[in-house]
Image (cartoon, rainbow, N blue to C red; front, side, top):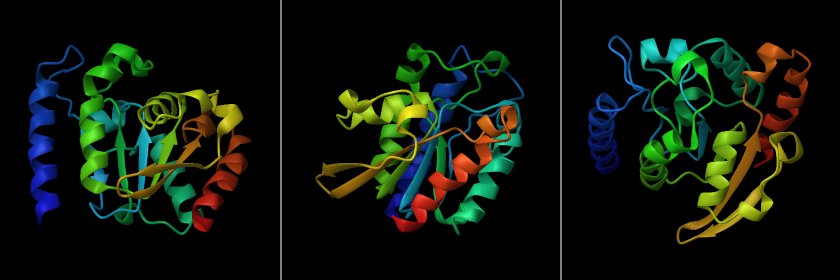
Length: 193
């Protein structure tokens, strides 16, 4: 029950913070994250898209359908993992988040990671990979996602070994259908982990 209380408190803080953000628009919702608070796997995207911003749910648009397919392929259920983004509000026109926006919102992700304490963090795309790897002192290992996708980086923490797995963002399949097989191969590694 303690995790639920901590997450609810954090969610309220996040909503209040979002209302003061330049990214906030009436009729849209912050996308805080959803899933099991006891998840061993946390998926971290970069920022919500249009569908996410009008529902408040992470990965519910076209990229979400692809993510669901990949999770099913890896025998994972959404309710057993935790899915979130670094930035909790949609940047205009679905543009990439700026470093300033990432820095403004990152403390919410940091706290989510602390409360949930996953064993595996899957970074979806370059922005989440860059942030998470820097946070866990892997800055020297950062390369473009095309070079490090599917690799597993082990980090020693006070609570044990944390595995960080950079992955392509599922939206890549909406631009290049051939990437579906690459993503499936990467998600297959999650089964082994």
